[in-house]
Length: 282
Ligand code: SIN
Image 1 (cartoon, rainbow, N blue to C red):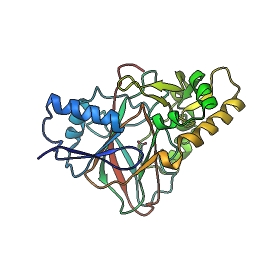
Image 2: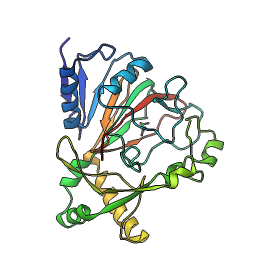
Image 3: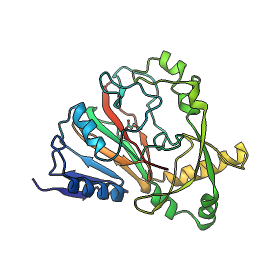
Image 4: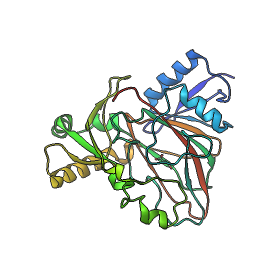
């Protein structure tokens, strides 16, 4: 079996074949995968047949387990969350706004790993938007502004008891096990332009999903700027739309991407298991 890493031809991402993730991976192979991961930002491993233990072992090649503050873990695996929607569910699609995972944490996760178990016959793509390219393509004046901005992040919009995934949503029958809490109102500040520690690339970091405002600007000024950046950050030609298949593992780099879930599969179950890869510093 020889390792092949083929760019998707889209805005980012590469497909990795010739590897069995049930096997122990050598240090050299992990180093090669890590280099290709930060280069392509998304790595896609089709036709794997992984248990939850395999998923955990694979995750730990790339760092410790990240914290998942608002997900209940699946039974017996405290670091795995189920991203799921039932065929008859009528709640909103989870995570449909472009975001990067848990950017409100002081040290957000470097990456996320998602493994497809039950995949609908159509719909349910995951979108990935390249934020290094988004930064590079900013008009000069907006790039100068972005360089100066400090963003104030919080999970309130989604995970506070009155947030999008709060009490009303749970009562509406969301099957995903979300733990909304008052803790979601805490805030944390990060520079809006993030320098990737492994590549040195600058990227726009996070989105209105978690950024509430910019330090020193009013709510109204912040909202206007956030919307202007969001339109730029999610332009179609920066986006790779990933199509899932069962037994496919995808890992992405939260430091250089935004991602978003999509719907279009009402009437079908969708189930993926997810871990996050901890970072060591922002
Ligand atoms: C996520 O943001 O982790 C979910 C992505 C998806 O369901 O496609």
